[in-house]
Amino acid sequence: MSLFLARKIKFYLIFIFFLITSILPVFSQEASGLSLGKPLETLREPGEVYLAGNKGDWNVRCVTGNSGEIDKCEIQQLLFLNENTPIADISIFKLPKSEIAVAAANVVVPLETLLTKKFRIAFSEGVVKEYPYSFCNQNGCLVRMGLLQEDIAAMQKGSSSELSISHISSPESLINLSLSLNGFTAAFDAIRPF
Picture 1: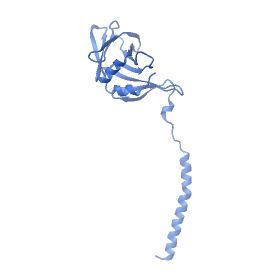
Picture 2: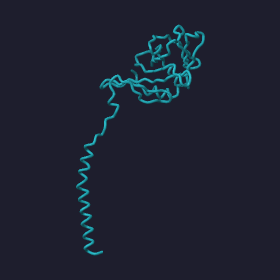
Picture 3: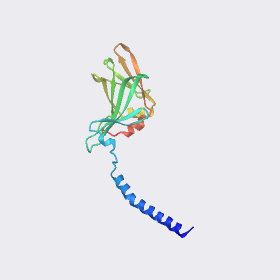
């Protein structure tokens, strides 16, 4: 290789090196002006309900707290009469340790439920309890239940529970709904007391 060609290659290499090193600060300045975005979680308003995830057949549903407060979360499941017809909704939340019940449950059933027949839930084969209806509004009728530690333990051991209501058109028969307990323990452990 001739001396002239070697000098020419050396000159081009030095020129390219200086060109690259002088352009890099320009690229880094442009990159520093880019928006890094803002997480959507911080955009929720206090009181806004959001889905925090799910465990098996249970949803973890939370209400956004005020600034500095922890969000309040409950676990929830829709119950279906058949594959496409939701008929009831159950939500469970933990209570403070000072309460007799360890958790509370709200169950919303449809209007035209026979209110003189109490709501029933079978926590296990041997443990069936009745609860009165609290009130009705345009969304349905509400059952408010206090759950003892043994009720929660039975649900954690089982694969399903049975809920029973009666319709005003056939007061002598029960409508039995299956409550899946798939993921119940993980969902219940994921929430904190109110």
